[in-house]
Length: 263
Image 1 (spheres, rainbow, N blue to C red):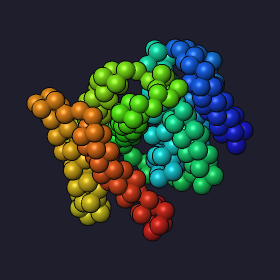
Image 2 (cartoon, one colour):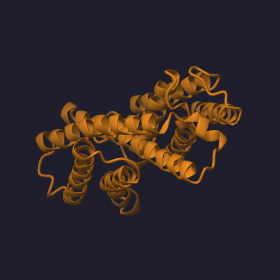
Image 3 (cartoon, rainbow, N blue to C red):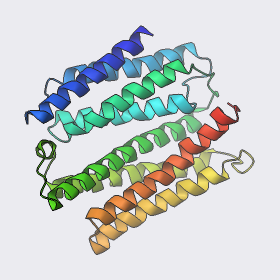
Image 4 (tube, one colour):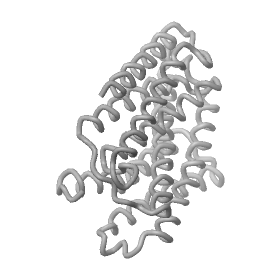
């Protein structure tokens, strides 16, 4: 419990420092926010390692554990990008989300792991990394929408100066989607290769929604390359594809593990 509370406190401290830096227009790479964020990330990851060591069967990847791991990936990518002077303001959303999901995971207890072999663990870890990357893309899409909306209305808020120029933010969005799409492709391929008899396991709806999300992200990247899609269209496609992905994985896990209590 002490590890969790310290990690949550450090996440919130990093968030507060980021908010102050944005308000004062003093956002910079490796700012004061970075060190508490780094400490929080190390404790967050260490807590999952500690649980994995204490839990028979390996890493816990049930519903709340998976949420916490995805938020850890989001926070880590945010800190890495912010340390290089890119998108540190994203931590205002990613860090408190990681704090909340870590605390929720701890509060709901830990379940015995399923004893997955290395192939299924590879599939699971690839999936979590893909979800984290595409969740970052969804946050970037929301920030792009907010930036465009503010500029159209000529509302020059202080937080606008904390973001890259519109074209740079859009370029970052599509690069993030490209990486996430590659990871999602790897997730689907490892699922086909390593998950046996998925129909009997009740994974049909999860597979269909995942494929629909993959198709939506693929269509967005093709539209960007072929037709120059950008702005509102890019935001709508990104958020729609991410909604399908959330329903595919966390929606099904919530119903199966939390509502039906089937573990």
